[in-house]
Every structure is written in structure tokens, then in C-alpha cells.
Length: 490
Ligand SMILES: [Zn+2]
Image (cartoon, rainbow, N blue to C red; front, side, top):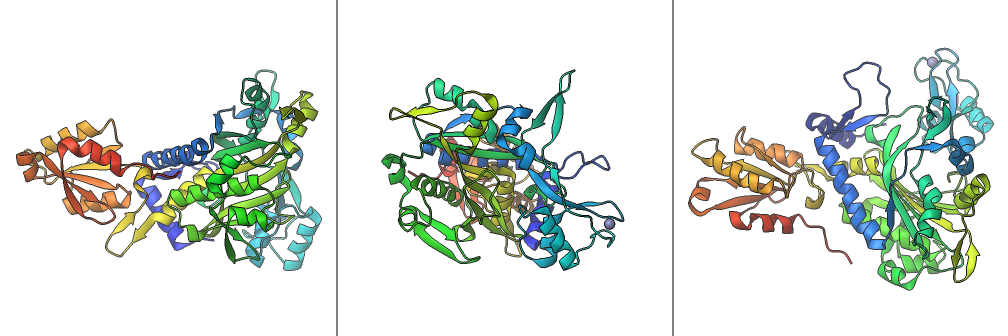
């Protein structure tokens, strides 16, 4: 499965250094690991900063940063040791291993729920006549493969795992966070960091990785309390794009969605609105966003209700955020295995907090930002990222590489380079430089020309309109700060 836009993004990513395969100078390096180059790393960091602004601080969340390696007991309690496993099948001739559900999906074009019993998936393989894609051989019965990476710690080799999701430390750290004073509910905890999943056949660049970034929000709440009015008032009028019956989408305010029972609880509707709005602000076309409620056999094993925030791409709809009502599954599980009391008090009543989760895939989001914003009109290829997300914010260029212009341009660059992500470009003709800078999404190009030497003004060229404005050098910093600022959303 591939799309033209996907191929264009990949070509740009490799040629300009947004991202590329990890360990690429070695043959046989495992698939599913990618490195961010200078531009991709900067874009990822800006995306995370936007998340901190429009999700974390907007809502008053508490951000933590937990360990990547965690004790085995964590995953006994979370159920991952037992249930976090993909259905696999092995070729009886060449020995290749495949995700059974994906092979079926490719053959039939229909989604095969990975939680179907193994025997049923195998029966479907036989019925559909699915064979090994590499050699055409017969496929084995379906078994389960646990996706966690096991590690052994210290000389004694204590059993531990790389976390398959960032949220577990938020559940485990809850007791301490609660004790040191964050004791008002709902209590939204969050974390940005790496997770690890031993996928059977990772493909499609940043869309399916074995090592990846997540930004997760776990809202701990008292199920007997409704969402507070202050939060609700902020987003109850935001129009959710709820998908149902396959393709059709209903636009309905969060408040109406709750009233009509499409979303059971206010707290769910509020956080769904929060996350949908975030993607709208950062430049994803809202008509290509949908919130899809998952069926019983699609939901993760820990969830009572699930929605996926999906975005349309050249590869089809891609899940960017998993939104799960996890009930008291997590804290009850950790109480049972650890023997610690993880109950809390609210209005004088003791309770086990419930959890509503927003689990965002960061790398996928970076990919979608690139695909949705890379445009071409035949003449010009432009990466139209919102200026506040641009990896390089400003380029300084001497019009020509002589007559004292490079020296003056370098002076302008030196004055900007600490406050902005700036580059200095003097090679090639001015037209070629503009084209290169357009392609990597630089929103503003500052050009030093002969007039600069007379009146100390420069031209600032806008990437999207190509219009140029004359700005005094003394006002350049303030001008750029304004042009690169975040959209004001209350
Ligand atoms: Zn084979």
C-alpha cells in the first residue's frame, strides 16, 4: 500500500534530511527504526511545544517524565504480559513470519480485528486461500507473539521490559503525585517520551515503528463527578467530527453529542474536542479529520469505550490518537499486584480513579503534517507548514555574493541566530535559494541587497505569497517574533 504523496514525502525526507533509516550504513540493520535529521528533529520538537501549549497548559495538565525500562510486575498488572500480542502465522516452506490479520486485510481489503480468536483468523486464511507473500508457500496455524522488548537488568539479570506505552508510569506515579498535592479531580497527567513495540513487519516509514514517540494524557477522574463547568464552558461548543457507518461524518457540538448520547460522558466529549481542536490549530485540514468510535472487537483489551482520531492521507485513514475510557482497569490492576492503596478522596468519599486517555502518536503526526502541507503547483514545491511549526524559521541571504553584501548579511544573521532558528545561504542564484528554502518550509527569507547598504532596510519574503516587504533591520526581530507567534486561542 502506497500513495504518490507518501512517496513524495519520503523522497523529500531522505534528500533534505527530515528522517532516514537508523544504522543505515550497516547492512541487515533491523527495520522499524528511524532517525530524525536536523529538520525532522526541529519539526518534532515544535509539534511537541504546540502540544504543550494547546493541550497541556490549556487544560492545566501535570507533565511527568518516567523511566523507559520498567519492572516486570508493571506489565503483569497492566495485562500487557498476557494480552499485548499480535496474531502471527509462519510460512511452512520459507519460514517467514507475518501478521496474520494484515495478510488477510491485504487479500480481502477488509479490516480484520486483531482480537478475533486465533482459530477464527486461521479459518479465514484457509477460506480466502492466503499464501506466503514471499514464496507462495502454505501458512501455519495462527499463534500469538508478545510485542514487548524484554531486557535483563544488572548482573543477576532481573526481568524487565521496555515500556510499550508511556502511560504506565503515570498510573504508578499517581500515588506520589497525589500525596505531594495534586489532589483535585479530574487530575490530568501527561508525558512525552519513547515507547517500544516489537512489531512483526514494520513498514511505511514513520507510520509503524518499533521505537517511537508518544505524547499521552491520562485524565484521572471520579466517575461519580461530572466534568467541572469551567472546563466544559471552554469547549462544549466545539464541533466534533464524529464518524459512523463507515464514511459519513456528523458535525455536532460536544454538548449536543452528550445530549444525544453519541458520546456518553462530558469528560469524554471535552477531551475529544480538545484533541481534535489541537490538530485543527496546527494545520491539519479539519475536513480530513474524524473521530471514529471503535467496535467491540477493535478496542484495546483495557478499554471500555474507544475512539480513534483519524486523519485522511494518501495511504488511507491513519490513526493519530487513541482515545480510551479505561475505567478503573489500570489503578485496580496496580493495587492488586503491588498491594499498595491507590484510592483517592473526593468530596469526602473514597474511590479508585477512572481514566480517560488521549494517546498520541508523535511520529505519525509529524508524517501527516508533512503530507498535508507539501504542495506543488508544477513550478514551485512548497512545504506550507504554519510558521510557528517551521523547522527553520528564517533564512538570511545576500542578493549576490559580492560588493559587501555577504558581510552585511552575515551581520544580520548574527543578530538573529540566537533568538530564531536561522540559516545563512549565499550559494547559488537567489531564485534557486528561494526554491530550496520553500521546499523545506522556511516561512520568511530576509534578503540583503544594495539598498540595505544605504538605508539599513532588508526585504522579507513570505513563503506562501512570495510577496516582499521592506523592513528596517532595527525592527526585524520584533517583526519576526510577531510573524512566528502561535495563533491566539482561548
Ligand atoms: Zn514463504
